[in-house]
Image 1 (cartoon, helix red, strand yellow):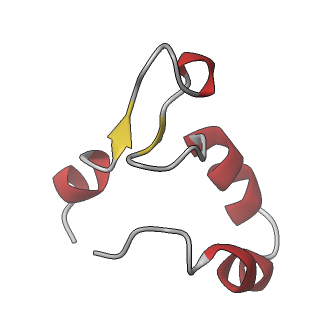
Image 2 (cartoon, rainbow, N blue to C red):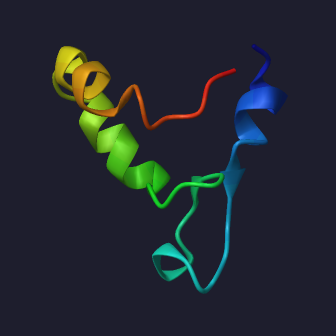
Length: 55
């Protein structure tokens, strides 16, 4: 997957998540996901893999 494809999944809206960048069609701020990924990635996959959009 190219960088452009990944960046196309990020969106901004002043009405959602207080205007923070988020994953398209979800209310997960990018900041929140980066914090999760900086920790235990096994926990992230088990808790959120069903909710995150596929390729």
